[in-house]
Image (cartoon, rainbow, N blue to C red):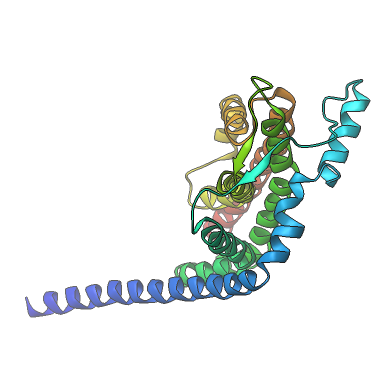
Length: 278
């Protein structure tokens, strides 16, 4: 009886040790985000001038490309001489609060590779040595996909959203005095959502690794995935068909890449099982 109690206490201590380790990983990750956020807050004027408020300028590179694409199809719908809206701050601490949360967002984006590194340090001891070797590029690939997604959200989704919403009117008598917090929210949600959407191949890799997903399952449900992608594109973009197609295409490509990755993982597992049986 005493022996059983001792084993139970050891198991509980082991679980508590894991919780303590997780706590320190979370603390270090949060600290990294805070440090970068503080640095971003120091340069907040430059961030707003050269990164955030540029979507108000009609010579922004994405608007110019949109205009060129529109002309190819014989339309100048994507071309504009101005964005008819002004910014409004209606709260005493509004601008300070926006500066804080923008700095935190920048901190999270830039510190994302380190956050992944801390996450990997926590889960890697539970993997086999061979699995750790095969997953060495996890941080690099995940970070690369995340940053590609962030750039896609910044140069594609955000300009398309702002272009459509800023020029849409129901009456000439109504002026668009946009709350700056609403403007920032569109930019933040578009960028962060795109960053995580581009992590789809990594998610499929691990789901295949643990046996929850197979290439056959992904191919069999491709038509349902297409519907979900179109719904997702409709959620994160304005209700414009061309915009939704532009967003849906890379997501569908990511889904196809995920099928390819899943197939590779399954083949490797089959080879491993054959070697073990031999």
